[in-house]
Amino acid sequence: MTGAELQHLMETMLPDTLLGELAVATGFQQRDRKRDAVKFLRTMLVAAASPSGGRQADIMRHYFEMGTPRVVRGSFYDWFGPPLEETMAQLSEMVMSWARAQPVDLPGILGGVRDWLIVDSETVKLDKLLLAEYPSTGDYAALKVHKTLSVGTGTVVDYHLSPAREHDSPHLTLNESWRGMGLLVDLGYASVARLRECQTYGVSIVIRLKDDWKPKVQRVARADLKKTFVPGTDLDLFLDDVYLTLGNVVDVDVTVGATDLPLRLVGVRAPVKGYRFYLTNLGRHLGPHQIADLYRVRWEIETNNKLDKSSHRLADIDARGGAAVRAMVHASLISSVLVNSIVHVHNRVTPTETGRRMRPPLHAGLVARMLATAAFRIAETLERDDATAEWEKLAEIIVHTGEDPNWRTRPSILDQLRGWRAAPAAKKKVSSRAHA
Image (cartoon, rainbow, N blue to C red; front, side):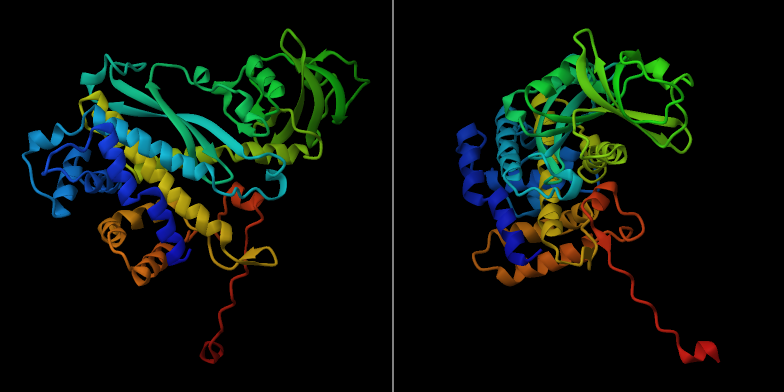
């Protein structure tokens, strides 16, 4: 990443003029000389990655450290109302709109779709005073963040909030806008109706087979059979010793549900637990092991959830009002999108030689720590008209401290599918004294 790229990204996502206009439009910036809306909004993002204290207390401390006029604690906390919530919600949508417009990185078997989207949720525990507004499955208050992660850009491109008690599945709605997309979800979203929607809207899907589903095998493409196959055989019987021996893979056409929805079922033998079965509507240009690898990419959203809570303090929200809680949730997710966008811009353009990366990719968690450390430096640089040299220094520091130290020995499945192979490490020269 160059300094010009970092500057463009920051100024596009967090421009002074736009932040100021947004604060006025939502009513957050009023005729109050003691409130600098632009600095306050940037402070919200700084405090999202701050390592100490409660979130609101950190926001107040950072805001005053930026040289703004001081107000008493009670007056400062009153700023966390509906206007701030609306401001952060609109800023979040603007940032995600920018992320959605970025070029995707989907080489090899990841191609063939406009993008692969992973849908999942994460739970945020809240103060008990919010139990009526955000009931959970226990005696505590909690909300869910329902997220859609783009594999092609490496960041969240859509999300919404709900009480934690609500089930995940109703919060995923497929429509015509999904046409040409790929979908990776866990069993919490599994239903025959959703699989039928994927067929209707041209969505490619890979999902695990639910234990209580009873597909019927209609045709065998690959499998080691003991006897003649009869079309329409129940899967349980097909998987029994009557038909199937312990081969390496299973690849069959099946029908599921009362309307006999046609799908493809593949099975890949796991080291200990026998076969793992996946339902998909992808063609046989991808083999069973490739289908299994695609499903493993779903783990990227689990990594993203961890980033939200460990690096952007989504688990540390201490507000007692609904508007304040939602404003800080938005701040955490905006910070997460910003970090992952930096990682995507850098990793996508890093030069390779014969398919091998000469430098490790950036690690989102390490980049998040770096941005938290340099937050005030970045804020000051954004306010300067001519800061080309400073942006170059910041970009160099982000790349140097953000490179993944374990990538050479433990590349993720997504890195492997992208063909990001590490260049061989240079052999260390042995001193002549060592042979003496």
